[in-house]
Length: 226
Figure 1 (cartoon, rainbow, N blue to C red):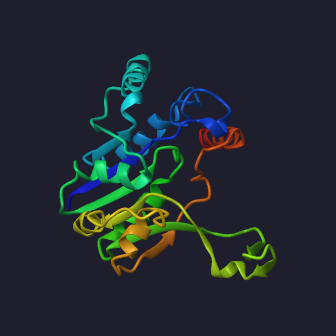
Figure 2 (cartoon, rainbow, N blue to C red):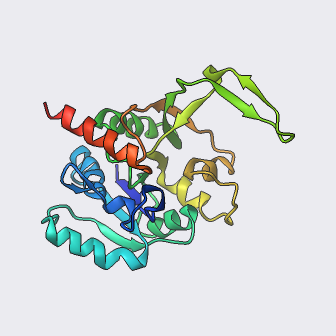
């Protein structure tokens, strides 16, 4: 069965407090995005990898690839769009309509091989699969009037990526008009009435968006090599 992954990396790095887009920031000696691409190549070295970057970042990415000798993994590079929806849609143009396709955040370099296995295996029987982890903190719902109340956290899970789909289903879903209420790729598929299945994610699979996330990711990587 054909396997593809669309890796969406369109961050500006503003929340990281620097001028370098977060996907290019160094993690354990190399840009974050290189670790992310390698995770999927390690899982399946025949996988069709599509990297989505803003057009203005392509030259910088190519420069980094030369600098770090990142040239042993084949992938397709395409332009990103104005929103996550449009960036995924751009990547889909390079994905066949048969098989399984994942959509992954470029700044989630610590997705485990076990999580990838669970996601892709489940997607063989389900049209839409997302990895998720339990909520460990107390949760309160904010009301429109400014009030709030506690809710049962066991009713909620934190969704991660990769979100994995039947390719034909995802192509059909992204033929819909864009809606700002689409919060992730699974919500686009769900709009069509497709049931989304949940599998176990891994807690280390954090989305690096703030300086503290980079510190944590570095510690996780260094610990994993001991």
